[in-house]
Image (cartoon, rainbow, N blue to C red; front, side, top):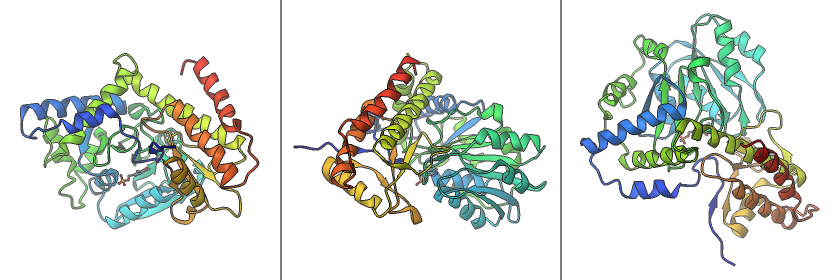
Length: 393
Ligand SMILES: *Cc1c(COP(=O)(O)O)cnc(C)c1O
């Protein structure tokens, strides 16, 4: 039999064919009217995709570049910041803020769980300059409650800025950026927007722009004020990743096209899609006897699955790859060998979920020697799908 390669990783995610064609055809110079028109169109679309009236900037770097920019542009050495950390990406915020000389308070939650709000409240000090958190912690496949943290900042009458790594949150979670008061919300190209790695985008509030005027950390390539100035003219400060920007435009057109050309509705459809596929995947895997690693606050971007005691999650990842050319992600750090992760964000549809669960039935039976009745996982997923379809999601 032949195999089709299928990416089920939470970044990079499967590529949209229309975006691939647009990238291949993007033979344009970046200081031309053609590029300026493309860049302005994509920036306007991104505002709708993020769902904000704030400025949205597009940077040629992976997601971490925008994370770094939101530390270097907003803080000065010695500033007190609060990092919410419950996985590898939360740990990245702690490392980054320390690298820029911040005094870092950390609220932690164990891997697989989300935070206690009371702990965040207690850790928020009058001089806390900013809170850094993930919306979806991809390493553990946990969803964090950004709305609750935003509310807590308001209720405490705190001047703290709220900086959210939404790199796998965007396109899988509903955000009210302006209503809640998210000062910076970061996305990345290789996640829900269906194109390769290399672009990061971020929304920046007026409060964040004002804060930048006081911050004294060094910045050069990632000087957001410079990017904003250039963006108004349809340019970026340095040579941008032109082909990826063309691909992003095609992806955002596709997402709008899923809802009759309305990008806001398309975004909602994309989020619902991830949530339905995540729920169907969880139901299917539980029906097969697996334990979810993040049962209480699961992310819709990916599902993390614990393998039974004595087994190695690497064996599942390897078997899916060799038997079905289906690529999933092992756990990171201390979670390696204990969990594996399967993605739902971006260009996945329900039939992809059925394919994955069908493969898992074979792996569970043949590789893990679990008692499996064929159809068991798929049947559980079909129930979830039927309910979602009846609710017109
Ligand atoms: C993918 C990802 C990042 C970005 O990592 P890069 O490798 O720099 O693109 C950051 N945060 C989260 C939550 C992610 O999933």
